[in-house]
Length: 164
Length: 261
Image (cartoon, rainbow over all chains, first blue to last red; front, side, top):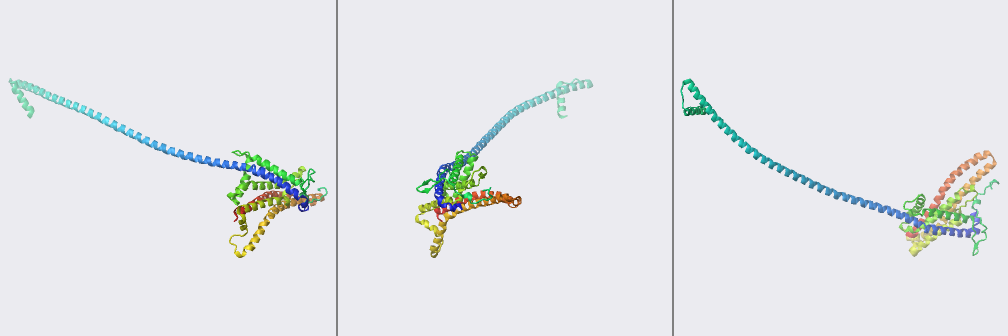
């Protein structure tokens, strides 16, 4: 077993070179480069955490902005609705006014027409009286050979038209 | 050896000085640059290249960076789970330990023999694993005493021990504590050595039976070869698990030092 058989001859060389090379490994690799590697990993982890935090913050801000936009939008909509309602009521009032004016005009025209009709009826009635009186006098003169007084005939006719 | 029809399963663990460095020594201690040292150097160099390739610090990592970050994240998670928030400062050490052992274990299993190279698994030598385990154990003791002063000895007296039992329990706990560096180093060394010996023994069956005759090769050689393929996969698993166990137990011991219990 060379490990034991050669121990006396080689132990010092084994210990010496192991210390040299393990020392090199420890100082150059372990102390020199491993902290840098670990640092890189830590930096990356930190960056990822920071990015996630920033994304979370941006999301929250977007939510807030959306909320305020919604509020503004709702206010605008309400305002628009109010405007529409106002315009509508204004238009309705104007229409009503114009309708009322037209009604007055129509009423006056109607009244005028009615007076005209009454007038016409009255003149027509007078004419009928005249015609009836003439006709009655003619009939009387022809049938009875009497010549009657115009006034008497007219009054008789008037009486008959009124009562008859 | 194959030509002689005889395979020495322990030969692969022989340490040989390389590049004529046999006589190098510091203060009388031999520090020859051996094949073991060479594979330590290769493991360290490959680990350096691997991590350097992943230290590009890109925000969106490439595959290589992702792989390195997976390992650092794994070690970081292991320390966080076993030691807690205080464990962060041990990441460089545990990472170096885990990756160095992992690379060493895997490099020793590489089929470089077909290229004429001889992979050497230095983690199959307790003189190497012992250094790592003593290193871990020293850190535990230094941190423990620096942080808790003499109060660290309360580690050896679990909560709720009756006063009468304290001396006995203290001794038992102290022994179990002192055994830790040995168990830590021996576990890795034994696991790696056993796997390599098993592979070598099975390969010797394949070679010997192949040299003997066709019938024996069919009966013993072919099944051994198939078994070797399976055990190679198992050894790859063991290589990862042993590196993990070494790092994990170091974390558990560090937890004792950091937080007592």
